[in-house]
Amino acid sequence: MSTVAISALPVGTVINAADVLPYVQSGTTKQISKTLLFTSPTMVTPILGTVTSGNISACTSTSMVLVSPILGTVTSGNISACTSTGMVLTTPVIGAATGTSLNATGEIVSTGTAGVGYATGAGGTITQATSRTTGVTLNKTTGAITLFSAAGSATAATFTVTNSTVAETDVIILNQKSGTDLYDLMVTAVAAGSFNITFRTTGGTTTETPVFNFAVIKAVAA
Image (cartoon, rainbow, N blue to C red; front, side):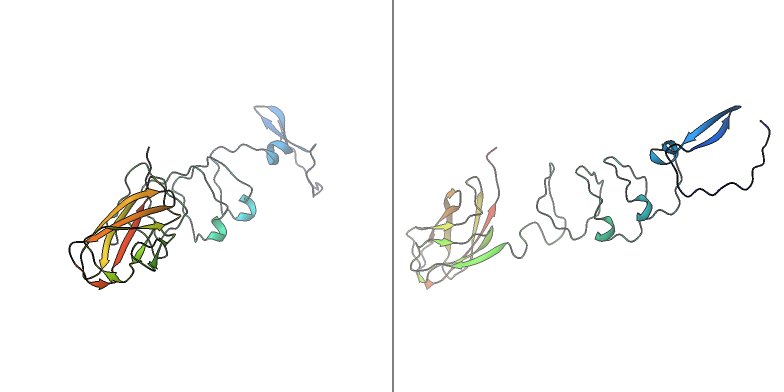
């Protein structure tokens, strides 16, 4: 096919559905339609230049694969639309993170000195009123219970801790935080919304207000 010189073509301002672009392939004249070029083109290993939100904001995928991408400054403002329900991170280094839940099939360990436990805000305190068998209410997963001021006794006494965070399958950890007398501490019942603490001294009779710490360990029966 000989070369044809064309000049003074009109300038197009819009692309119509019927517009085509002719080209020659192996001696045969063919046409490229608007749909093929602009509506649903298929690009194989394209090399993109500078890409901004203005021309890539509509590109979405549920299985997009990025190979060694280089990201600039990333903030919540320009990455908030990037979400995934099945994102896999391999050996990520995570700084301070917050969330509502974390499910793991393997062990969760701490190699630092802070350990694994409850953060500030998870706990609370309550002081027992009237007597050492008076129940208390503290709807926290961990906390401190100050007993009513009374003389220590080797005779066991029991009081109920009403706590909405407790399930009947949970495990309650107890220890004595303060007090002159030494106390034996036992959890004698765990139910949905409460647990019982049974205690006695090892023989001391000091009149005081000892403090017992507790922590709820979430557990299941199966």
